[in-house]
Length: 75
Image (tube, rainbow, N blue to C red; front, top):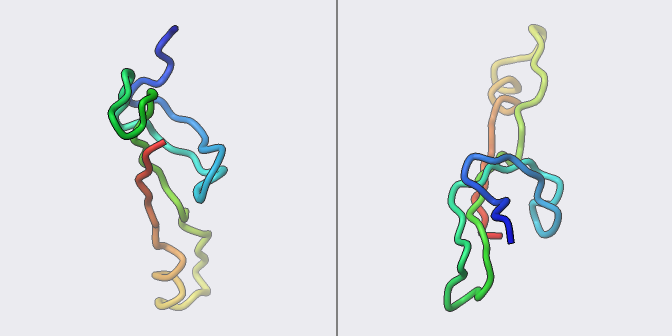
């Protein structure tokens, strides 16, 4: 079987809490381990993207809208 999960590749999470989020493969385990006996990967991505900011907004609102929330998930 070809190994399509390679570190650095970008993809979409299709199931779970982060469904629909874009993620990058950080590390892949092709042979499996004792806990999940199948090939899996460690993903990192952005859960909450920064929103649009305009000049009319106050400092408090700008800082709130500029925050980025990341996630790490084994898939």
